Image (tube, rainbow, N blue to C red; front, side, top):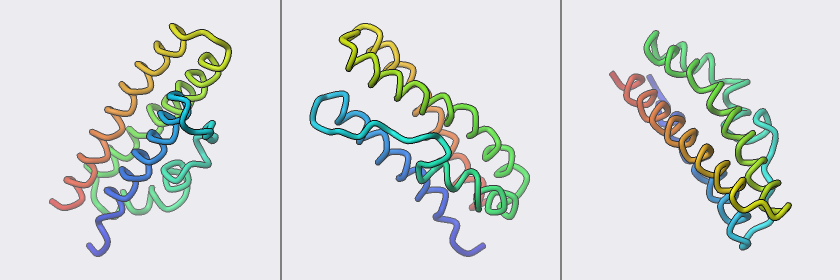
Length: 120
């Protein structure tokens, strides 16, 4: 199948988004995030992603389907982390960052598995 690298491109999109959120939390950026439908990963999940995953096979489709819930929760946690930081709730912000990072690891693992499944 041609163009299987799109799963790795989506991984890169997620990492870039995470870096922008982290910069804001560290006080070196002003990115406040987007709705989970509007980031690059979200746009892919809700447009061409299903067909690309389907074309990569049943294992890839199952892995793809597992991205939706943690992706939405990641956005919720990142928005909450920034809101709490701006409100002066450092402990609350850190708790949200911890959740955000757990979800990020899940997303990264699933995207890497999706890339591997697409190549097999």
